Amino acid sequence: MSSFAHTPAGRVAQPKPVSEEERRTRVDLAAAYRLAAVNGWDDLVYTHISASVPDEPGHFLINPFGLSFDEVCASNLVKIDIDGNIVGASEHPVNATGFALHAAVHAARTDAFCVMHLHNTAGIAVSLQRNGLLPGSQHALRFHGYLAYHDYEGLAFTPAEGERLVSDLGDKPAMLLRNHGTLTTGRTVAEAYVLMATLIKACEIQLLAQAGGGELVLPAEAVAERTAEQLYDGGAVEGGIEWPALLRKLDRVDSSFRD
Image 1 (cartoon, one colour):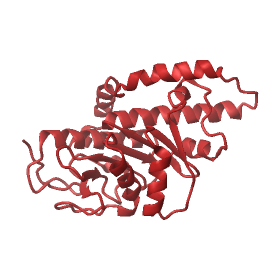
Image 2 (cartoon, one colour):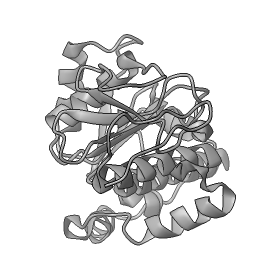
Image 3 (cartoon, one colour):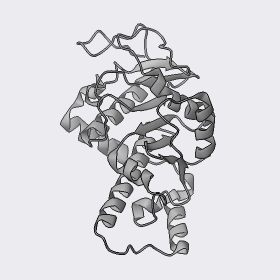
């Protein structure tokens, strides 16, 4: 068992011991925020990545509202319940309205340990296109038959929209929210992050290809379906190989996410 001590401004002391499982989740989630910042996927202080608290059903970790992604660390992540209420002590508020989307997915999907929602430019741009993500690259083919869409309903996220969103999502691991952004779920933080990285790159490739102005060459449907199944890999959890390398990369840049 371990606990967090008092830390400099921007970090919060935990009032009781934190389990090793929660500690690992906190480090992984903080790393996902920092990596998103390094990649330029953040949007000022908006959007969120949430993760379930191991062995605490109905409790989740989320970023302190008002901090940029590169300020998030393991100890200042805030623990909340499914309604967005803070559990325990925190020096920071949370964006309960922003968590509502996450809460709907967490509640509906037992496999959604981590929910990642971003307003990245490429994802929004492709979400505007009527045909959405085309099966034009190997990255895009990971989502061929595995990508959901949800139509834009405005800024306020209501319980009724939450029902529609999770219905649209179904059992798929990723979604383009029309006119809004991207969403991925993961059985681990690593899986949600790697899926998001793959989806964003697929969107970037599509936009660059379309900007070239020429006719796009897409693989035959049979090839697209076969490749998608190969990349699905029988439902294996993704991110296990990539995540340690990403943590090492982040450690070389700034290891304070572990604090």
